[in-house]
Every structure is written in C-alpha cells, then in structure tokens.
Image 1 (tube, rainbow, N blue to C red):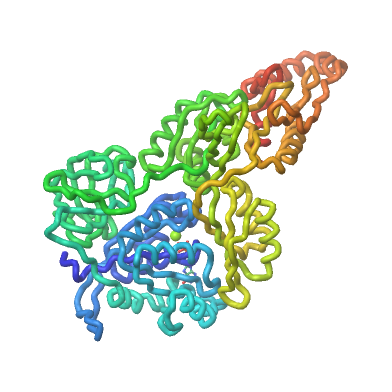
Image 2: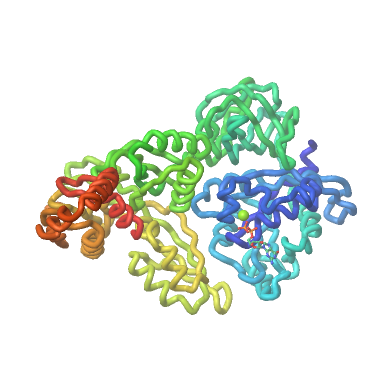
Length: 604
Ligand code: GDP
Ligand code: MG
C-alpha cells in the first residue's frame, strides 16, 4: 500500500468516555463488520475486558474509507486505509499506551459531553503530545440529555488550543457525527513518512499469545518493508526468528505478502512467549538489517508485589502452571516461589500496578479454577545498611535486621481532577497519605487540577477508594512513577505466642506503625478461636512491642461438656474437627484456621 493513502490514528479517552463504543461504530460504518455480526465492543476480545468494561491489551484494525470529495488541503477523493489502534486506558498500562501512540500520526481525544475532562484525559493527552501526534478533539455522547456540549467544547478547545467550533460532536451510540469524523481523520492525519529503501524497522506495539498460533506480534513499519519470506531479528536482544506469516487485521487476521512504510499489521514467528517479542522493541530483517533501534524501548519493571498462595496446598503446582501460562501473554508479570509459615507454599508475584494485580488474580481464579489468598500488596523498598550494603526488598518479611542507614521508597506524581468543592477533603486525604502539593490549577470555574507527590506505598492500598468516596465519585486520579525518596519506614511484625506471622509483616511509616499494630492485633483476636492455652498476640518493631492482645484459654469445663454426651454427636464433632484440621495452619503451637488469615488479609 502506498503510504500517501495511509492514516494511522488512535482514540484516547478517560475510562468510560466511549472509546470502545466509538471503535465499534467505526468498524460498522466502514463495513469491516456488519451490524449483525457486531457484538458489543468487538475489540475488547478478552471476556474479562468486556465484563470490567476496560481495555487491557491494545488492538489494531484496518478500515477502508472512501472519501467522495476532495478538499482544499489536498485530500484527494478515493479510498484510504485507516489503521485504528485501540489503546488500554488505565494507568497500570501507560507504557503500552505510549508505545501504541508511537505507531500513530494522530489521536482522537474523546471526551464525554456530560462529564468533561478527567484525569486520564489529561494524562493521555500529554502522552500523545509527547509523541508529537496531531490531536483531533471530539465530544462524545451528545445524545445524552445531560450532555453540555457547549461548556465542554469550550473546555476541550481551551485545553488543546483550538476554536470551540473545531471540536467535533458525535454520538458513538447512535452513530451521529461518526461519518464526518472519519472524513476529518483522513483530512487531518498526516500520512506516514519513512524511507522505503532503507533497512526494515518496525515498532512492536503489542504482542499477544494465541493458543493456536503462538505469539502474534503487532507492528507498525517505520522504514523499509517486512516480507513473509524474511527472517527477522529482535533488536533489543539480537534474537532471530523464522517468519511464518505477515498480515493485517480487518477485522480478523488476513494474510499479506509484506508490510511497507507506515503499514500496521501482525507477524507470526516461531516465538513461544511474549517475553521474546516485547512491546517497544524494534523488528528488523536478519539480512541487511538496520543498525539503530527505534528509540524509547523500556523493560517493564514490576511496581507492586504480593504473595499469592493456593488455599488448598495441593494446588501449588496448578498455580505454577497457571502463572506460566499467563506469562506467555503478559511480559510484565513476574513470579518466584516463596514459602510462608502462615500460608504455606506460594509465589511472590510482581505487577505493574494494582489493577494489573487484580486482573491477574481474577484470571487465575476464574480461568484456572484456583482458590487463592493474596497478601497485602507492597512496593519495592531500597535499604542501605550502615556498613554500606544495599538490599532491595520486595517482601516485607525480608526487610533486613540490624543497623540501617537509609530506607528509600518509590514516589509518584499524581494528578487529581475534581469539582472545586472537594479541594479541602482532597488535601486532607493527601496529607494523611504523606503527600506534598505541587500545584493547583482551575480548568474552569468549578473544576480544579491538583498535583501531588505521594509515596507509591500509600497509593496502593485504599487511596483511590477513599478519594472516590470522599468526593462522591467525582474526582479522578492519574499517576506516574517519579523516582524515590528517603523515608522513616519501619517493619512491623505480628507475633502469635512469640512467633512472627510472616504474611502480616508490613513496612509502614513510623507514625503509622502503632495504628497498624493495634488494628492487626485486634483483628486477629477476633478471628482466631480460643485454644487450650493462652495465646498472646503482639505487634513489634524489632524487639520492641508496640501493641498486644490476649486470646484467653478455653476453660476445662467447656471441653468436658463437648466430650460427654451421646456417641453420635461425639463422632460428628470428631469428623468435623478432622475436616477442619486440613485447613488449619500451625504457627508455633497455635492452630489458626486458614479463614482467619484470609479474613485478616482481605480487609486490608
Ligand atoms: P471506554 O471505557 O472509553 O471504552 O467506554 P465504553 O465504550 O466502554 O463506553 C462506556 C459506556 O458509555 C458504555 O455503557 C457505553 O454504552 C456508553 N456510551 C458510549 N458512547 C455513548 C454515546 O455516544 N452515547 C451514550 N448515551 N452512551 C454511550
Ligand atoms: Mg474500552
């Protein structure tokens, strides 16, 4: 395909502003998908994406679009090739978003006409501007009675620096305005530029494992061409692979002989898991290949860790196999076996963020039929000892003992958008989470953007929930990693009869240590049944006890009563006990029902 008729674009939006619905509507209008075959949100292929209404993996689809009339700016009548690249909208997947943006020349900035600009609208816009994309501002959902297109067109125009009349108005639901939008994409999107005679360079913007086909790698060709007879090379590792197939998606995979400058399509190679075909890497040919990679490749590093344990210890191997399978399709997921005194055998898993963690756990339980307990999530801490040795702590129970010189924690730059009524309550929340206000701007009279630096460890627990509940759901949040800071952090251990329960160790700020200790000790007192002896529960920092509770012993006469009486009741009781034993974990001499651990961990 001649690159002058190619238009590569993406749609960026805050969650729920209608990106997937608009993508579906475009598939229909370009007759790539007929209305009968269309099922809601065609591009959100995974069930879990449809259920949660979010887009996790990017997808790309080729849409033919005929323009009947030319225009003054040099658009000729004729059929154009539009490549629409769907991007994940959540902060955990920012890296994937930024790589899919690199594959485009324009971005449709979609804003709900009843909601206005939200935090991820801004975050995505900044990413798109960073990638030098032409921005096409569009208001969606103008069919809603509550839509206020005039107000929000002005807001959006102010943001991108255009006239409010240049903001397109559509309804992805009814189709109103979508045809005009497609024409506008042809007109406004610059055609790709690249050297067709240079060695091939293609950007990997997505990589998906398919049970039947192996890894399907989505690429945008920047220079040269990739032919189905070529042997290819991944430039970050130098690994070479046989090419089995090249093609485009419209809307299913369709073979093509080759992909040229500006084209978007897929490659199928001998690659067995997505870690060999990483998002952001550059593909070239093995013979006469390029020598310079396309810029910006980044290895995805986990930001949040948690222990995952099967409730039934027999499922340990099933869990390992399930994690291995998920990893085929998720280059950012890491896991290593670990043992917990309280929870048995499991894995310490690394995730890009909380949503990534929830999705992974959900999939493990659902698709692989596993029952799991997860420990509270934690971030990665860097510890320097007085003797100069350094430790990276991904599991709180492995926090080093001895003389510490410095503990560093990751921080994030957070952007919060909210109606201005809630400024006070947001400031209060951020203060309790050790945030520092970086700046504040009014987007309009009643909407404000607040910028905070916050420790990531404070964000991973309940920050988002609290923000939502304190602002009646109106505030939105976006954040990005912003280096480390030294902080006065301590490890709090929880001990039963003097034995630390590793699953409950936490790294917290010293001012929050007492509160955490009291809360956990109180909770465990409620949850652990009385034993035949007294069980002290303590919270401690090193050897210093900061909180304690006692579970009193069962009185002798209660036991006597149980074991008297008729024989069938006694047998029933014994059977019940035997069943219960399976799910009992021993901590020292103390028998703790697994449910107690689950309950203590689940309420955070
Ligand atoms: P995404 O998160 O940006 O992909 O948003 P979705 O496409 O999943 O849409 C979120 C919700 O808004 C869904 O319930 C859609 O049916 C609804 N929606 C999307 N576009 C429109 C529209 O133009 N009008 C109305 N009334 N609802 C819409
Ligand atoms: Mg979506």
